[in-house]
Length: 172
Image (tube, rainbow, N blue to C red; front, side, top):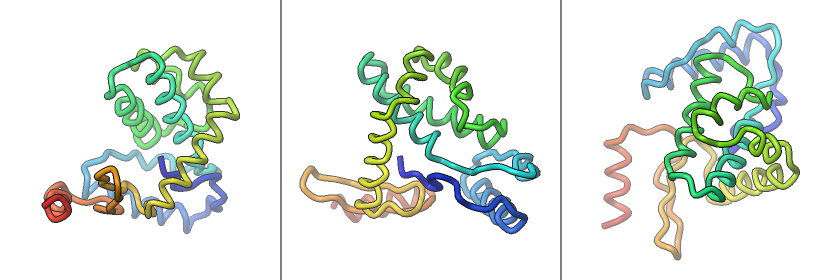
C-alpha cells in the first residue's frame, strides 16, 4: 500500500472537489472504474487514505495467519474501493469493514483488533516508506524484481498493452 493521501490534510473546498471530480472522471474513462460523485457534494470530508491502507495490511496479516487464498486480499481491496468510490461510505470508520470481512471470511473481531492496533499502524507506515523508497509516487505503481534488483515498470495507471511492452523490454 502506498498511502496516496495519508492523514487527509487537504481542505475540502470547491477547488479540491473539482480536482477530484475531474481526476475520477479521467480514471473512470481510462480504466472503467465506476465512481459515484455524490461524495463530492458533502460539505465536509477528510479524504484520508491511511485507514483503508491500514485495513489492507491488517487483512493481509490475518489472511496469512489463517492460510487463506491469495486472492482474499485482492477481493478485500476491491471491496474497499467499491464501498468508497461507488457506495460513498467512509473507510475511516472500522464498521465500514464489517461486510467486507464477512465476504472474505475474515473474522471481524480479529480484524477490528488488528486494524486498531499500534503494530498494524506501524506496519502500514513502514509499507508507505518502502513504496516511496522504490519510487512509487503514482498509483498504481508496478515494480519488477529478479531478487537482486528492482525496476520500475510504471507509475500511474497504464493500459495493459503498455504494461506488457514495458515488461517485455525489462524481461528480455
